[in-house]
Every structure is written in C-alpha cells, then in structure tokens.
Amino acid sequence: MAATVVALGILRPCYLLLLLAAASGIVTPLLSQATDTVSRSQPLSGDRRLVSQGGKFAVGFFKPAGGAPDKWYLAVWFNKVPKFTPVWVANRVAPISDPKSSKLGISEDGNMVLYDQLNSPIWFTNITSNTSNLTIGVILDTGNFVLTLASNPTNFLWQSFDEPTNVWLPGAKLGWNKITGLNRRLVSWKTSSDPSPGNHIFQGA
Image (cartoon, rainbow, N blue to C red):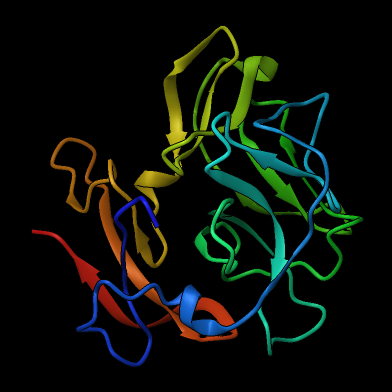
C-alpha cells in the first residue's frame, strides 16, 4: 500500500497502524461505471460508484461481511487495494436497507444528502450557503470526499477529512480547530461487522 494510514482498531487500540476495516474480512461493495462527481443531475445510487481522477479511491455503497444483509453504508475505500478496505463511512449510525432505492445527491440548499429508500434524509453535510445547486461532491485522490463549488472546485465547503471515522489519511488533521471548535478524532468500529461508533477513541492535542 503506497499511502500511509493510521486507523483505530476495535480490540487493540494501541495498534494505530492497523486498519480496522482491513482486518474485518471480505465486505461487499457495489461496483459499476464511475466518475469522480455527484451532482443534482447525477446522484449516486445502486451499483454506481465514484472514482477519483487518479483511480486511488472510490465512493459507493457496501455491507460488511458478517453484518445484517439489510444494512448498507456509504463509504470511501481504497480503489486499487485487492482487499476491500473502507477508510471513511458517512452513515455509520444510520444504515440504509436498499442502496438501489436510496441515493446520495445535492439538495436544493446545496448540501450533499444521503436519502434512504423512503426519500428521508439520514445523513447530510449541513453547510450554510447561498450556493444552491451550484455545488458538487467530488472524491479526490487523497481520499478526501469534498463538497465544493462546480465553478471553483478548490474551495471546499465541507470535507470528509474534517469528520474522520476510524482511519487517518495523509493530509488530514486530528485534534481541535481553535477557530471553528471542530474536534477531529478517530472512533473505532463497534465490531468488525458494524461500523457504528465503538468504545475506542484516538485524538490529537
């Protein structure tokens, strides 16, 4: 694996170089043709996935091995690593039951929103902006999943690096942001088949 990662394990939190998800066995992603962008006109649903421009990372739906068959999650994973390894999970506390009738899209207020099969929002980026439908979601070659302006893709309105789950990737930061009050920390999976927040936490100063 070319990139260096730090992950918080479930049973052995002292092993910060162990990817929890990599140790969890085979998981089931949905795979199909891909671009790197989700927009209002092109939501992410079913077996569609996003792939970063250099092909390093992908975004799509998966279910962990050994987990309930009706619990699916939206995740970022290594696209070129043979063993499926999630590095970020959006809806870790609110799985969906059917990825084909659920979707990740851009709402009218410009936020990125994951809707379940009943079209109810179960996860969203929660930005306050007047950008409306000018925003898009993009997966970068760093593994950072960002909400940005279509006209200015370097201006991140939201980024997954600010809301890590159990994996640290190069370029991301941990600890308190003294300006915004944001606390970036790693929280383990509950079990190897359940990505909901577990009992172990790692955070910077």
